[in-house]
Length: 449
Image (tube, rainbow, N blue to C red; front, top):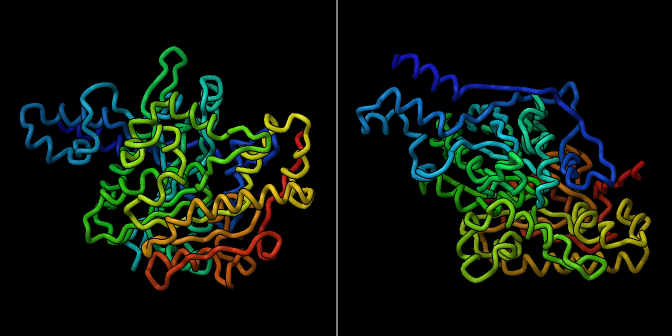
């Protein structure tokens, strides 16, 4: 009987599940999925990595108790990853689950050689859901259910396994943690009536525990990164990530396109603050935000990176386009703030912006530079703010590291991140204002049908 339960534990840990790869195209009605542009096109030469489901902590604990019901000490030893301090929650369900109740997952490609004991965790992006209505919709997509996630995804850019494409991290253990909660891996609540589970924080904790059990606990080097909503998550969880390892492990964090600003939109309103307020309130985020912030600011303010980054203790690298495409589309000039459509063409293609619109966007760039001023004073931190109309530049091969990839001072993003991580040189790169940079891979969007 005990051997039968041990078999269940093993099968839970190594279970895998899939649902075919889907390539997403963008139109202006799909703003929350702009991160699809952060994913390189699938091709024959790209490494494809399969999806692994994360077993539920509650299920693992039940199996462990069944195996060792009378010997608590032996139980602790055998079920070490289940009973870590970060996961002991006596009340309520403990299973880490997506919005729709399915298990979350990640894609792991093992490192080798000099990178065998180095780990890179990439947190997927994909907007947020801030109301019952859009969370109910979200759970019918890959952003809310593992039922709709791709079976295999391409590992490109910072996830590539080729030295010529990813010179510093190609042979590390590289992980992409899928995003299916809608609150940057921070929520903890539920809506039973609508069958919604807001379990982002538990997904984060369980994923880290599962990866530790697969060798990450022995890491000599680790980097937590993320794109967009995942970039915000990398900031929010940065110090937690540091706490997973002994002091002898080199640990740093990278936020790509995660510097979302609490900035006024073109009508003078606060579109993004209103969205974040809904996310924080609906999903029970407030209890999982950094205490150094919530001790003096409201929870919604503490979901904005500008109120966090200067106080993160772990070395952090901020990579962001000064004219972030997602923020232009969804925060600064959304249709709700532009009923007359004055910004319609500009938000699809920067080349069609009027001088006054460009002037407004220059003001946004100035706000971004002010937001990182104190942060950039720390020697441990890194910065790369290029004057591009882009969003998510680490996972796309053409923007991460290629012959024509974006540069500041002749230094590509991959080289800048590597120089900073390995302490080869300080990196505080800020581009001149638009339109001076001709190395940008600017995004141009199609008109909605």
